[in-house]
Length: 250
Length: 72
Image (cartoon, rainbow over all chains, first blue to last red; front, side, top):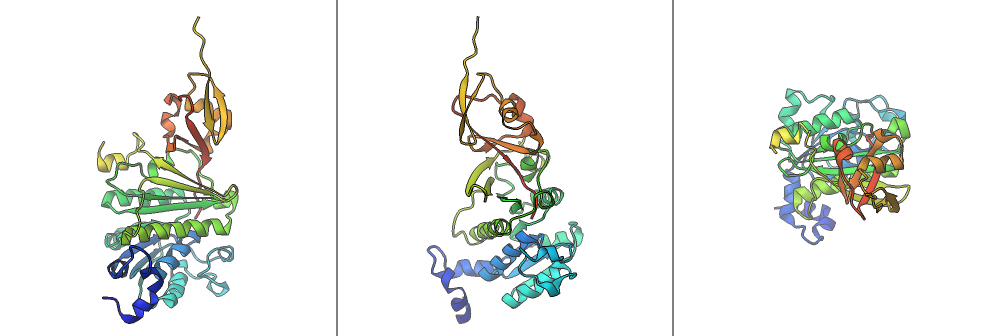
């Protein structure tokens, strides 16, 4: 049962078609890991804690820099030099004091972090590099954890929900389809584009956790702010992929 | 003598004429010489790079060529 203050707090979501108390409770009991507390991770963290997620893991080894402030709105000038995970936790905890937030200042999935990740309902990949994404993708396939990965550079963002066990391709399959990914240091980043991608990730996570709307696993959504187009593509399995092929046969 | 019939496909929303036996690599080269940065979808499905050379296109295929990004 939700408390009276929870009914009030989440009343606008509870009014939605398909949303109900049980689904709101599901969010309260869920644990979500956010890898990367940059432009994407800020949006995901704020959206999920606002929606009532009960447990968050924040994972990032960076410290806050001045160049983060235009799009990483949980930070302010006083945060510069702090560990991103701690600065973000402080601000998120102000937004929702009941959420249990654990922080990990690392970019390596070691035994300690693994143990916590295995308690998660879903993993959200908000990292800023291909190597990190490949490592998270591999971990999710190894332990059968759903994953929502996203990226943004310049005027373009992509979001892809991935579910091990489904017949679609994984992030490694997608990554193998190009030899070079452009990144923020090549092309800069248009702040609204990364914010939209992070909110898109949060929406897919909420869809999955509440079953309020479907998630089309294995589809890549690509938004281009230059042409104002959103295109969706199926990601098939790469026959040479050693992640989704080796962990799920075929 | 066998004469190859050209075909028309749609590439990023624009019509493109190709030789009848064209593969995906031919389209990507026509579009941009820097293959490294590009991903390709045919009829809304991304095609693994390793399949491009053998992927035979057919009349009226919809090809999308685009970049993938990595920042966050």
